[in-house]
Amino acid sequence: MNNLKRIYVWLCRLPYCRGFGIQSPTDYAFVRYVINEHWQYYAYEQLNRLEGDWLEHKLGRLYFRLANWRQPAKMMEDEYAPYWKAGCHKVRLTKEMESIELVRVRMADITDSLLHHIYNKVDDQSVLVIEGISQNWGLWRQIQEDQHVRVSFDLYYCGIVFFDNKRQKQHYKVNF
Image (cartoon, rainbow, N blue to C red; front, side, top):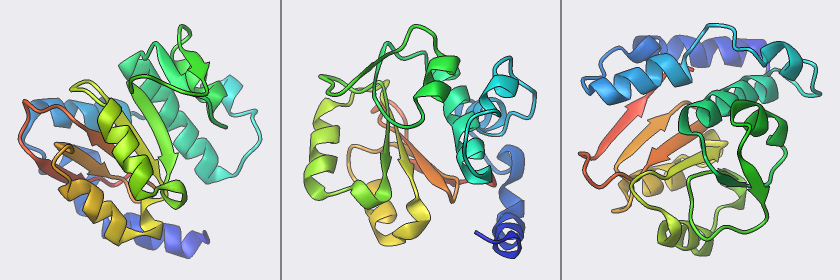
């Protein structure tokens, strides 16, 4: 993505900076202290040495903070494994999971059968990260409107979905 488009996306999302407009204390804290945390974490220096462009590093640091916040016991193996493991040292990466605590999928890989498979394995504590939501806004809206989804965060580069049935259905746009 060129710099002009990056600046344009950031300026369009300026009203959604740092949790502005979020009334839920839980969601506000999640945006402020997980999504948009600006403090240097202990592993950033080591993780910055990994290969990748600016977006891979930006998403990797977000995934690091998500793992640090959620502390999952098991996760699906993927190319962001160093970030997940740095955020949660106890996480065990596997090829198949019987339940979902924290999982990342690419928008390009999503099919109806994959979504059905994911929805059957989630519980109130599950977190789903969908990378590349800007590639298919229609599918992203379909996921947001699904009966299983309670809270979602649109970060433009990725989306984060929560399934806690005790919460009111809410969708946020966040300048990330």
